[in-house]
Image (spheres, rainbow, N blue to C red):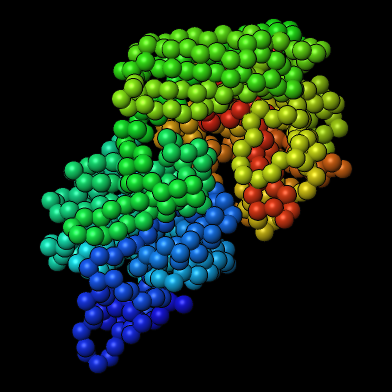
Amino acid sequence: MRRPIPLLCTLALLAAGCGESGESAPASAIETEVTGEATPWSGLGEIESPGDFRFAVVSDRTGGHRTGVFASAMPKLNLVEPDFVVSVGDLIEGYTEDLETLGHEWDEFEGFVGGLRMPFFYVAGNHDMSNEVMALEWQRRFGLSYYSFVYEDVLFLVLNSELFGMVHDPDLRLPGPWNQAEQLAFAERVLAENADARWTFVLVHQPLWDGPDGAPADWEKIEALLGERPYTVFAGHYHQYTTHVRNDRQYITLATTGGGSGLRGLPFGEFDHVAYVTMTGDEPVIANLMLDGIQGSRVRTEALRDRVRKLEGAVTSEAALGAGALFRDGIARFRISNDDSAPLRIAGRFERGRDIEPLVRELERTVPAGAVARVEVPYHAPGAPVAYEGIAPARVVWTLRGGGEDDPVEIELESVVHPERRFEIEPATNPVRVDGDLSEWGSLRFSAERPGELSGHGPHAGPRDASFRFGVAYDDENLYFAVDVTDDSLVAGSDLIGREQDHVQVQVDARPDPERSANEGFYEAMASGSFSKLLGRTVTLEEPREDPLLELFGTGGPPEGSRQASARTERGYAVEVSIPTSALNEARGADWDALRINLAVTDFDAGEPDHTVLYWRASRFGPRAPEGSGTFERR
C-alpha cells in the first residue's frame, strides 16, 4: 500500500515515516518534494544501506505484453533486495479514454507492485499517457508525471517524454495538466539545486536521442543543463537493448520486462531483464539480470547494434516465381550483401516443407568485405505438383558470422521459401453482396492451411485450431475479398477492442513499384509513412469497442465507401470486405493494375492469455518476406 504523505513534507522512505516533530530525516532518506497526497511512488519498505546502495530498473511491460512475465519479476526483485525499484514506463496497455478500462489496468499493475518489499517509482510512457483522459487519471493516482528525488547524494530526475513530443506525432505535445515549458523549468531548477550531486540518473521513456531525425531541441536543452556532471540516462520504448555513449556518458535503452518482443537474444537486444545498479564509490556498476544469466551494461552497444543491423539486412530473398498453375520445380534465390569491412561467413540450412523439398540441404559461403554474392538453391515438389495458391512454405536457417577475428559477431536469421507466381485477380463472376454469406463466391482459391508465417506467443495446434481460405475479385466499382476462417474457439464481443479478439486483417498496397514491392520493418514503415498508405480493414465478428491506438498508429484505414461484414459458420466465421476502385486508383496515381496483399488472421482461444497471427504470405513488415511476395495483377 502507498503511504499518504503530508503536503510539502520531505519524504523519508523509512519505517518511521515523515514525522511531525520537526526532527531531521536520517542520512539514508530519499528526499523529494511532495505537492499532494497522490504520489508516483509506493512508500513501502525500509532503507538500510547508507553510502552505497542498490536499485533496480524495470522496463517496458506492454506494447503486446506477454502474460505473467512482469508479475514473475516482482518476487525475483525481492530476492535480490534492491533498496528501491524505478521504471522507464509503458506499464499498462492504455491507449484508451475509457476510465473503467484504465482503472482495471492500473489496479492490476498496482497489484503487481504491491508484491514488492521496497518502494517503486513510476515513469510515464506513451502507453500510460497518450491523451488527456489518461494524463488526468495518472495525476489522480500518482500526482506527478515528472519529478525528482535524492538518495545518498545521488539525484534521480524523472521526465515525461510525451511532453517532448508524442510517439504517434512528435510535433504534438501531451494535452492535460502539464506542459513542456514547466517541465524544462523544473529540470533546470532541480539540476541547479543539485549541481554537486555525486551522480545523476535521468529516467525517461522515449530514447529521445535515438530517433531518425536526431535529438529534438528540447532534449538537447536537457543535455546542456546536465553539463559536465557525471550522469547516466535510462530509457525504454524500443524493446531492444542498446548502450549509447553521448557526451562521454552512458545512455542505456533497456529491452523488456514482459513487453512485446521477438526474444531473439543478446545480439538483437531482445530479452526480458531488469537492470540492477549498484552505486558504490563515485560511479554506478550496472548489471542486467535475466532468466539465463547476468550481463554487464555493455551487453549490446550502439556499435554492436549497428553491426547486427547490417547482418540482419545481409540476406534478401527474391520471390521464387514460377509459371503455370502448378509448382513442380524451381529455384530459390538469395542475395547476400556484406556492407562490413571484414569478410562475412554464412552457412545456410535448407529444410523441407510440407509441399516442397530442397535439392541442397546445406551450404557455406564467404563473402568478401563490400561484396555481394548470390545463392541459388533448386527446389521441387516431391509428390504431386501443387497449386501456388495454397503451397506451404519451407524454412531456411542462416548462421552469419561477421566482424573479423578480433570482434566477432554471430547471429541466426530465418528466411522462407514460398514459391509463387503473379496471381491474377479476375472479374467477379456473380454480383458480390457484402453480407458475410460467401455462397456467391463458389470455391475460394487461396489457402493458408499451412500459413506463410506464424507470429505471436499463443499456441497453434494446426489447421483445425485456426486456418483460412480466401478469394479476391473486382468489378467496376470495388475490389472484393472473401475470407473463410476455420477456428475451433471463437473469442468475440462488443466489450473488447479489435486487437483483443479474433479478427481478419486485410492490407492492400496499390502503389506502383518499387514502393509496392519493397519491404520495410514496422517501425521504419511507420517513420517513412509507407504504413499509412496501405488500404485495408480489420474485421471482427462483432462491432468492437473503439480502439484509440488504431486511430493513432493504424494503416491508412478503411477508405471512404469501403464495407465489411462477418458471420459465424459451422467451422468458424466468414468475412467479406469491399474497397472502392477509386481508392485504388488514387493510390496508384492511375488506373490500378497490380496490388500487393497482406492478409492475416489473428486467433485467440478461450482461456488462453496470448494469441497467434497467421499470414497467408510472410508479413512484408517482418524479416522473412521475399520482396514483392503476395502480388496480384488485374486480369
